[in-house]
Image 1 (spheres, protein in one colour):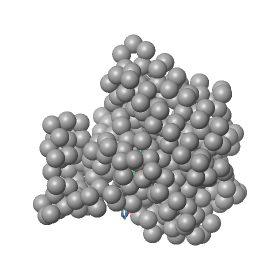
Image 2 (cartoon, protein in one colour):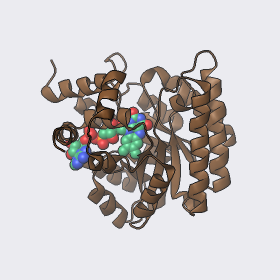
Image 3 (tube, helix red, strand yellow):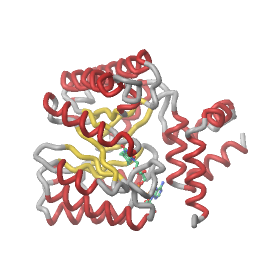
Image 4 (tube, helix red, strand yellow):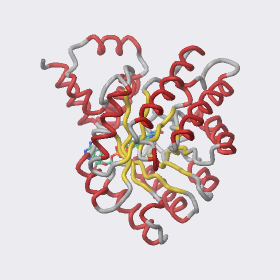
Length: 316
Ligand code: FDA
């Protein structure tokens, strides 16, 4: 049986996939300030301005060019180009040196789901992005999408790491498989972003219960903190942040051997507090026109965000 917030979550995730609803909402007088809280703007210059603002309080950034489910090759190339110009712009503003600003890429946005050669096209495109990042002195992290793409994404990351060992990858604690993936990934230099997971997944592959997801998150955290890699703890959950801090300490980790990550606009005071206490803190900044799917997922995670959004739709 579903509780009300679970029902809302499932509904929002269904709406997120419905293009008619998206068109409706895109035409509605959505309050710009609500969208802007989570998405600083449509252009790379908006993302770069957000990076500068975060750096003023010692926060790092990873930037996501919004756009998933790319349906043709030209679109995949356009997204790739958008990343390259973004990285060049970040480098020109001196945000890439030392990895203060890096990029996050969804393989589906650069062609993974195209028929026949999707995997090869995505790999070719993400390589172009990695080459630009290397020139600029920074890194790339590959986002994790729904469970049908997990194997392909991990395979692409293994391939990329032959040339670019600093490529990071996200793993999702809600999947049953992730503990084993963490064991495989906890090698020297390996940048691994642990998150709970944002997609609507069946119980055959994923824990459904919040408590089970949290327990899995802690098991994965332990493996990553005890391992030789570079854990990136992506959560707003205060309990998990405390546990991560304690596990890092008992593993004898230095402050620069792991980092916390949160989403732009979510718990900004906590972001600053962690940075002030000497932790590495990185903020995930999405930018671009395609804010709809992104915001729908964020709201599905958090019913109060949905209420904020609904209210902004009703008032002008
Ligand atoms: P969750 O949403 O379960 O919240 C737990 C608790 O945190 C709440 O009970 C509350 O106490 C506190 N909290 C949360 N939001 C708050 C708010 N707005 N104000 C106050 N308190 C709040 N997913 C994915 O599938 N693939 C990916 O590649 C990524 N990448 C990624 C990068 C980064 C940097 C982040 C932060 C997240 C992702 N995600 C992701 C999303 C992730 O999987 C997950 O959906 C969200 O982070 C929400 O889960 P939390 O762990 O934040 O806690």
